[in-house]
Image (cartoon, rainbow over all chains, first blue to last red; front, side, top):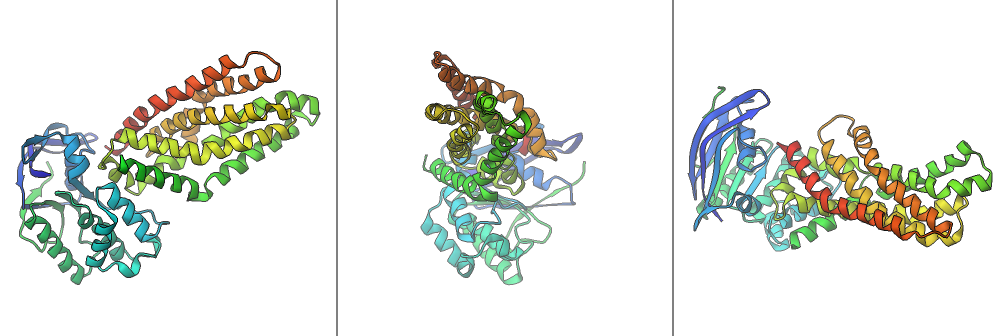
Length: 205
Length: 221
């Protein structure tokens, strides 16, 4: 379980452009961070760098567990949820099959997937093909993975965008519970999150 | 381990089900074989002499068809991100994908290969050998093909690029695969060719996942 995240002097380059440099950040258990910044400022790239999908140009991403530093591979393979614009749900599969695969792959069980569906009010949609879901329903299905398989660090890219106000409230509640249980959240957002957060504003360099 | 098993079963289902599954490759295989008599002439003696080689050539071409879907869709819809953050390293993910590709595409093609060869005039006694060589060779075709599929990620017209990358690498299995059948048919020692074919497939099985995982990481970054 990841209990702390440290970014040390992080710089990310995309092609020829240096997005940002010298980024230092410490995040502890129970803390949430809202990443803001203009389009193209590097919010998504930062999330992907923390997830290990992009190699930083400079600097390090360190994960801390209960007994000191964790191997980045171990931390990422069992401690991170990354939810971006592409949710990995195959449009031809049924909602339940797609969710169940994602949940089991990330370490959850069928029972926890069922519980998450109840929580997110997805039960009536599970037999439908993913392509027949609305954008909001589809996002709820993707969010169910976060709830169903316990991983401590959530990296979210615009998680609330397609949700209606009632579901935003519900998801805020779920994020609050995750933080209360010692989890961490970093979310790239344009709208404010309904939970207490620190803010990190990425500006063009 | 259980995570990988879940992935393997899913990949098998996806490979078997998506876009008609192996039916497309099988139909293509049969079509190429049907064109052959029209191209070289329908004389049975001539056809019989080229049947094993033609079956192997058609097999290699048919193996190309489903490669584009091996990684491309997962890359586009974000599944590859999810797979990269799972309990198994990408190398193991690539191994599971390659094996599923072999079982759901290579194996049905290997079943059809003797039928095609016999239809072209190969002797019935060759059937077990054609099936065996196509099955073993199919393993190599799936894994070297997977390398091409991973390398072409993110490029437009990936399918054509895959063919250009992969077809030269298909030369050894085509040589040895057709060689096994030729040697067996003419009563020569066929074991060296079969050994080379197996060695090629095992090498592809061992090295393919490493190359596929590296290419996927490169595409994701």
